[in-house]
Length: 209
Image (cartoon, rainbow, N blue to C red; front, side):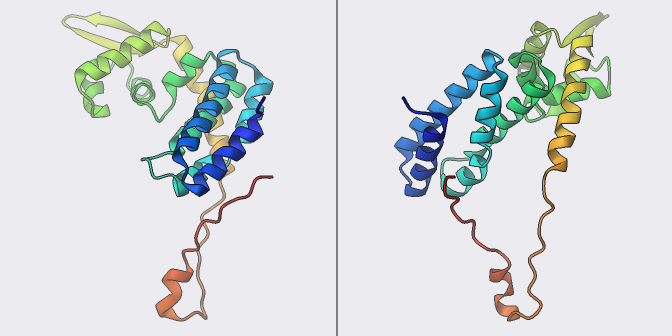
């Protein structure tokens, strides 16, 4: 039976070889393993998968030609980190991720308690029907509640919603602090006509450990 490391190594090699059938197969295997770990709240498995897939987003962005392939691994890493740090159920974590529409809506509700769905749709730049669907998901998960005021409905965070956002905030800050500052590639003695080229080194393919 294949191990996580073998799935990862096959995925990396398939990216380099542009063998996208294998890329898709190994991507599904890794994602399935991650989903199982998250759904069962298996902390040891989540840590192993997060470590195994830590460098895949950059490789996918560089070698894969199908849209934004690295986003899958970035989102998966966020979910693993949040699940390990907060202990919250998977569905709640997924709904409050900043990269999702529901997460963006949660941010606006926190900033303006009592905001209306119409105003949320405007701020999120989404159709009212889309926001209505997202609010239903958030309400079903116990993260928000709605109060009727005359002909309008006001939206508020529940206690659980506030706690979930509070759990995410320090994790996001900690993750950002680990990011190294972007290097300023500059070569003072280089030929000026070649400096722009020299300042943009290509991304090497990282061999498996």
